Length: 398
Image (tube, rainbow, N blue to C red; front, side, top):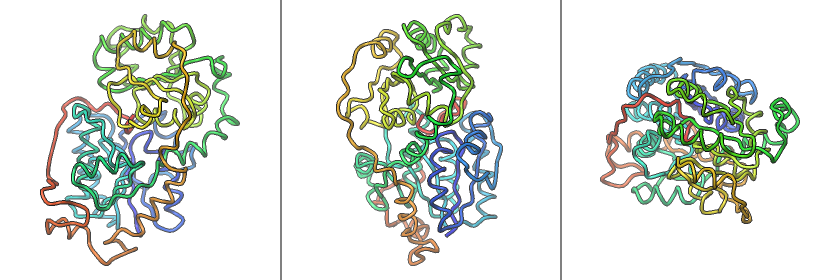
């Protein structure tokens, strides 16, 4: 089976690492990098660290407005699909790369697998929410990390083609944790001791593109009576300079983007983490680090219900309290599988009808005929939504 995998943002590189290894043991994989994360610190270092084979195709799209970036990706991907003729197109998460690859697969009637399907924050103002909803509704195989995602899909009429596989980021973090402790010197380089500092990540457009919101977040972090380490996303650095907020960051150690192993080491050693990233919420949970989420909602609701994640938005007092107050952590449940999601996804792909693994039914033909093994009547595959803000280089439900 020939699988064309499309990535473009940091967490997608991490997710591709375990799944690419598992895929290539039995199948042919063509890896495509859209270039959505164009900064080497957000891209190239992950391929090198994780020993992911270099992309077979690099589209070099880079940053742009939401519509132009997605459209340019679609143009390049359509030509690529025609040249490669994959059995399955595989996409991850909820970035513009995900949506572009999914829309072209649907238009070309190619089988589509969505890894990390079914997540919902129920905030359609987030571009990522629009991306994930539209992608789910044109997918033939939906690999969900937990039962809640399956239930949310069922509420939208999607009941077939859904497989609970667990989370591939758990696969990756299990591999990375021990290696990070042994290979990363970042804590020493930053002169911080394990368990004494707060790690922060801030990159979402909703938090960085409004001056008062960004100032409130940075002010709360800067005022903490403990070290704060913030690997700064290019978007965040640009906004700090544009808004003249350099004086607000005096208590924060702003550092350049770090590689995956260094980031895992920082997160593993942190006393707490403050983030607006979906991926970091999960990684913190896996590494037993309490998480304070700088958003009003999350697609990873299970971490909140389990007592390991708290939503505080961008209000300074709430941020400070959540990062200073004493907390008692409950026993940690198993939420997202056993760390073998990649193998489960490969097994699900092997059973996907219409591929060379199982050519008995063409899922694209089902779509053409208005039926489909995985959709109810009334499912609108041509639904559209829009968002005109410039792409935030979002890191895939980060």
